Amino acid sequence: MEGKEQLDHARERVIDAIAQNINLYGVTDSIGRLYGMLLFQENPMTLDEMKEELGMSKTSMSTSVRTLLDLKMVDKVWKKGVRKDLYKAEDDWYQSFIDFFTIKWRAGVSMNVYAMEKSLSELEKLIQQENVEEEIKLSAKKDIEKIHHALDYYNWLNRFVDSLDSHKIFNFIPKTKDK
Image 1: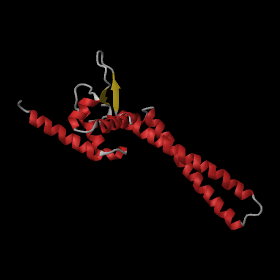
Image 2: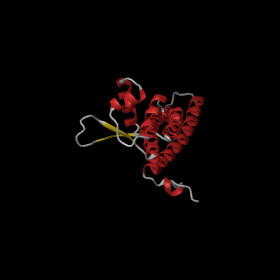
Image 3: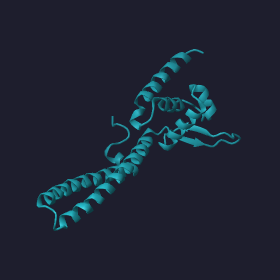
Image 4: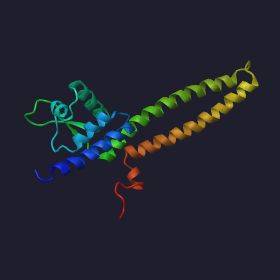
């Protein structure tokens, strides 16, 4: 078929680049290859079709698809008359980034804020104790200042994540560059 080799070569270059950089999402290059391959498919694919295309084991393929589903980079789709699960790549890269970023950052922020608030409470109690040396109290006060500064940052980060989730970020940084 005329041009098929050039088409495949161009696609393979993109798939390779995605596979090399997918680690930004915390996943392996084989998962990146799967996402890249699905991106160029015209129709949704079954696990068996993906396994055949990439030469991966069914277990590995299933785990990879589950990872991409969790990251919201792949969607499970329904097709009348097809009993097997079908999957397609999420082609809205903006939304994929937003979903990934917000999932990861909300979890990290929540964990850090919880630890800091618990430590703040303990440090404030420590300062109130009469039998604690002044040097320890002074160190605790400095730590409280540092934790408050960090909590300000996490408050800002939560608002940034909210701006992604609500798509308000696109008011400041439009999806397409003005020409």
